[in-house]
Length: 75
Image 1: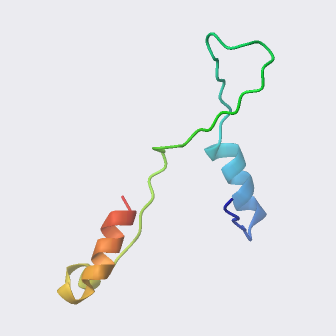
Image 2: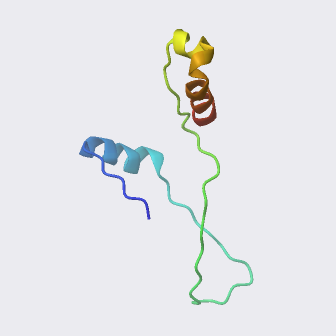
């Protein structure tokens, strides 16, 4: 389990109200009233994440680890 602490309760409310949604799952051929355990993994999201970087670090070969981390982790 991952624990995330948000200092600003307004940020938490925004996540709850805007970024989350209810879903309905229908299991065909399932036994009525049976206890099923379902695991969902989100593979894509509609909120792009990004970062700002100065051109000097992004173009300088001495910062290759930084460049790799930036391009691998941000859209």
